[in-house]
Amino acid sequence: MSSILVWNSAGNSENVPPFPESIDHWEAGQPFDETCLAIMQKVENTLALDIARMDVRAMDRNFVLDVEYKDGNHDIVRATNLRHEHNSLGSEMNRRLWREVDLLRWLKTTTTIPLPTIHHVIVPDDPDVSPVIVIMEKLPGSIGLNALGLAPHSAKERLMRDLADVQVQLYRLALPPRIGTAEWHDGKMDVIPMSGLRTAPKVFHTLEEYVSYLLDDQQYYLEKQADATTRTLGTALLTRIKAELPALYASLARSPQVHRRCVLMHDDPTPMNFLMDATSGRLTGVVDWEYQSVLPAVLAVGYPFCIRYDGARGPEYPPPSSSQGLKQHWCVSPEDAETLRTVYSEHVRAKDRECWEALVEGERFRQLVEWLQENGPYPAMEHWMDTVFPRH
Image (cartoon, rainbow, N blue to C red; front, top):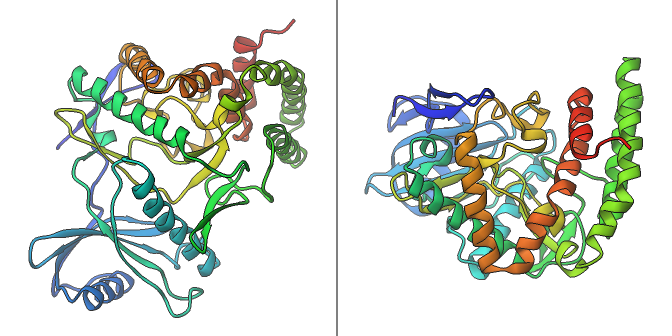
């Protein structure tokens, strides 16, 4: 694949290089990164199989290796990268990977979401200095980011229905009524303080408590800013948000069992983390569950990232800090995004009316919280506030 089709902030299509499925390649007998070689040696010893070749898919917080054995079979190997500059505490990074393992195993028994099967976990003797190594199934399909733009419209619609099925299944799972990150102890799910792309110092028991924390965290961020204009504008926006919250909370009162029930959310639902059949649009995998949260449905149920032109993801706003470079381009055109939103919404409604209510009625609340989770840009946030919550 020499190029993929994306759309820029002006709504025009562009051909750009695809997201790389390999950033480095190794063949048996060649020299390579010592840590990768040590990981592959442990995999070979554990499975009594020889690795013929390997492609590195990622080498940041985690190593993600696509290994091919001499018999032609493939696996994905994930291992914590304890050399990464942000992985200062090996045991905590290993714990995060263990959470992903436990979550995948649990979801495989409670849902039909296409997820990789965990084949084996190699446990380190000392988790502070050695990585957890996870050997898992390699799922079929193309990276969504690479396949979606060029897919026929019928395939895009099929993908939306499959993603809607995933959302409904996550909505229906029975979870503890607390806000944080899911973790397992002795085979039982618990909720711990948020640990991942979003962090928090404690577990929250209500939506109001969580939103209050986000407001306080924003205020703390503003107080550290040297620029007086930024502090003034940001503080004024927080005041406006607080004034809007009573009406937003009241709008949820009609169906608290719908909006406030806790739902599992994939925290990094970008089109790089799902796989699809490029011709039919069938969803073949949802991967990279390292980051996940348990949140009230009003925040956890949403439209797929790949078709969003709304809120902080709108093309009129600069990329938020959490966008990882994805904000500049969209996988579908603005026109297709509108029709695909309808396909997604209608399929959710047909499958689960309450999940659909959380999707539709919670949209403004979700967008507001999304802005709170970003540290600016405050002029863009003010523009959004003026559009969605006009000044009285």
